[in-house]
Image 1 (cartoon, rainbow, N blue to C red):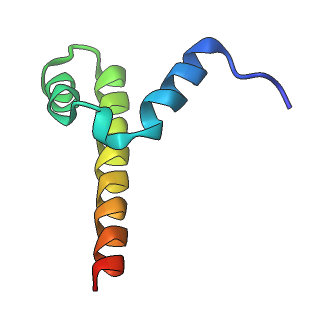
Image 2: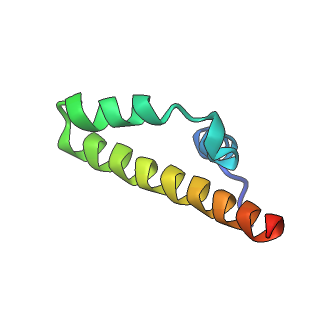
Length: 65
């Protein structure tokens, strides 16, 4: 297996905790970034973070019941 490059390691660390990411900042990038490819990237990250947060909330609710 190849060793991940530093940028990939940074992204993996960032995505390891979806609550540490400023969701509003991602939304601002989607809305105002002039590069359409970057907007798509930020949109995908926004969706990923929302899904991860939702999974955690759902899993917490199952243990509370």
